[in-house]
Image 1 (cartoon, one colour):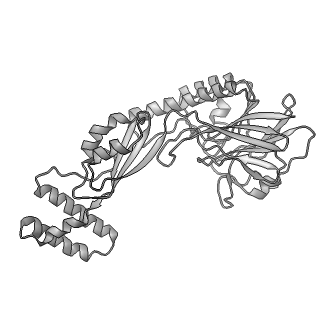
Image 2: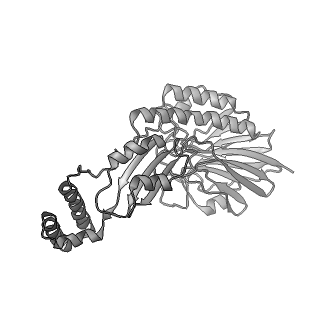
Image 3: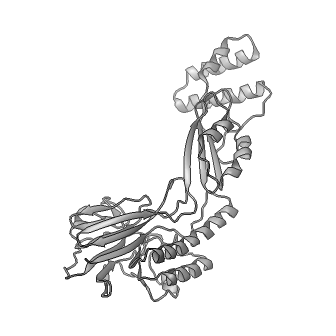
Length: 371
């Protein structure tokens, strides 16, 4: 039985700025991103893949660091299989792009035109089709395309694009186009969340998502795909090669010490990852984010804290006291009851918490996101 094993990856976005991190840690993350290339090569060798497909946005922009270009050449050379690259909207092909300037190894083929072209691989019984973004945006590259049938040849397409978004500026692709393409497997990029294996008629397709998160919009485990194609059948195995992951955790600290709540509810092994912890629930005073950060930051590669707690409703009961505290709360309560919306009520609650902290001779804790 004919069989083809493919390593499919996309959206590495090498040399991302990592604007959410301090400059030193951003530089560390860019170095670690380059290491993804080496792990791709190791995976290709370990799994003995026949073909590697990189479906766009391998680079974050045309302005790559020298070290990235050198590592790209080295890693691609070490892949013991043909490699096909379909440039996307971030790394679109032009005469000034790194793909045109770098001396890429002989086993690498870069699609350079916005029209679909193909390369036959007789030793694998496969023909690989693909196209490139040649500008930051692209019309539908698959529109009107259909590959003629070839006996005993797998038809594979590598393409950066967006399925099911007809008004997309980034190569809109319809399920009907995939079904009519004549492909056995379509390796897609652009969407950073893995799709899993999908099917349109006799055409299998997927996008692997990004192999490692770069921000809190890319949380959880990220993967590349090992795709095994046989006659009429296809299997997809997601494989993680990421070093770090991003996670967002919401913790209700009602009636609890925030520091204890974090220690109790978080996983044990977080030291290599980037976390955003959002505190929720009802409290009398704003959590001291600075103190929390000082106690917790060593548990993570990077930590962000957010305070979304609300003033405990019972605090307003003190508005009836014949004290300075009671007078302060009565005046705020009058404003709170006349507030026009939730945003105004939230600001009044925060003012109450700051004021109560001052009356209790506690240090004022300014609300912020990133200590």
